[in-house]
Length: 224
Image 1: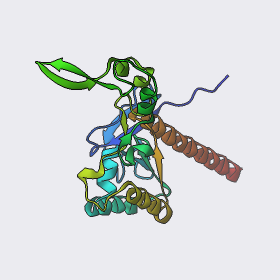
Image 2: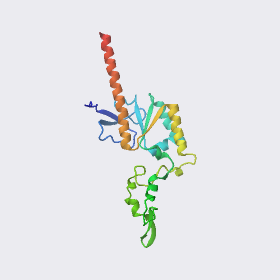
Image 3: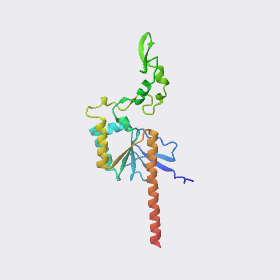
Image 4: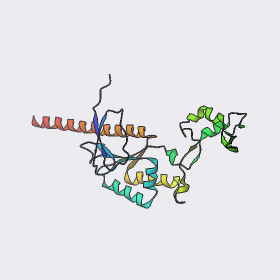
């Protein structure tokens, strides 16, 4: 029979504009100031905390001079290593925007109406307009876990400087990992990010309990 674990209290920094929801997890949440980063254990938050980024935030922080300087400053203020950044996205989300593999799977299924292209024409307000074929919506691939039915994956770098590419971003993250001892965890979604942060802070909670227990035993032995 598994041992029931403690209910931990997670502090969310007051500067976090869109806090994660920890609903359904064995945690309590409070809002307060944290010396640096976003989420920590209440009472221990200035000695260990975790940073959270959504993909657009990640790009804004590590692809501009001002954003990168701000992140380095946060990293240098931390009193512990390694630091952990939890990202609510996938590495494929920062690669250049492209057609999802499910598009090719849909096209490979023969459809008499669209000729397996996934597009057809319809009369809308008297005009012949190109629209998605009925087969596109009927295909199971619409529930694709990669693109969630949009037909595209990745990030459109066309809106940014020509020097900013996915290779440049990933190279920057790798350099910070190597030089600053920072770990980047790709958590797929905000629910995954909340679970990941909860697990990290729970490990911290258990570590603190073990250290306190060893300290009590040491004091007891010393007293004897």
